[in-house]
Image: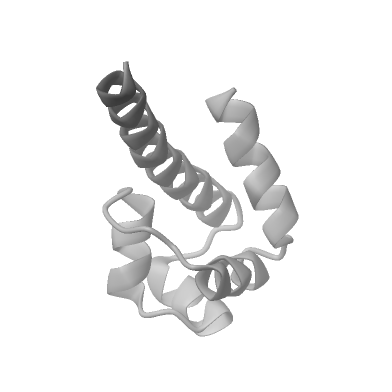
Amino acid sequence: MPGKKTSSKAAQEQSADVIFGQIVREKRLALGLRLIDLQSEGGLDRSHIGKIEAGKVQVCLRGIIQIAQGLETTPGELMNEVMKKIY
């Protein structure tokens, strides 16, 4: 059923955003960083980072790179963690 696949895909995409946000938050807290600290390190606005952590917005590649830099990791490592939690 095409409608069912689309619904499942949408749910998976939404959960990927939520999972990514959770990972970002966990890593930020493990480093002892506040949102404002990650803003300084990664170059993203702290309110936007807060929305990312809450899974409310999708992140573009540039944003993933900036977040990874601020968290002293790589974009690949962040994505690997997301994929592990999804599958």
